[in-house]
Image (cartoon, rainbow, N blue to C red; front, side, top):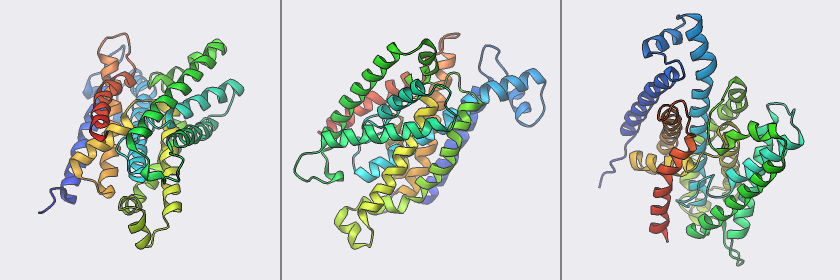
Length: 336
């Protein structure tokens, strides 16, 4: 039987997703207390337009759109890589302790060093992400020498949810005792891109430029790891170093995304699954489409949050959770 998932189909779907993302971006650039018509937004993007419109579009709204796109793509890539390495359909940065660990580490970092340079936050998040992930693996492992990718999917997910809840509770406790300014500075950790500015773009952009191409380059390695440890070894792959490299990229992607948009629930779970339905399981097609789906999901959630109940802004994480939670329960039921 001929597979319906072809490279031509993947290219067409990718172009379609990129087009929709571009349209939503233009719409998002026009939304705000002062609405800007799409033609005016396009004039600004092509180098013309009046000064006020340029300031609104380029200085206030463009950073928010960029952070949404970058963080959505990074969460999606992280989820796709982790699902490929662990061979677990429930693997996602927010479900296996990575996001919660990064959030807690960011809180401690800013509490200890309020005037820290912009570039320091992602490194702190990375350390916390590994800590949270390691704790989940430790607690989910059965003490009988079970290998990483044979951990029971449901057990891993349930332990991850429990650890994430515990780390989140510790974070809230720390914030209660923290100076007033710190709690305000960390409101983005609830899962929102509200208030994103050029500084936040500068914080996540270098990580995105380095890690997203790295994730794409891992496509063949992830395909081989998906074949199982024995077959991958027979094909000449050094399984443990390859697995550690891929996990390193996946965890770093999620940690950097947390410093831009907080813990956006279920983006890392949902985007790879939607991409797999569209273009199949081969990572050379799955990863690029996952990036586009993740970017579109977060941008659409933020745009909806800004336009649904103005002037109140609903965090993007609420919408991604409303969509992702039922799908997670469906996967949990199917996998159990």
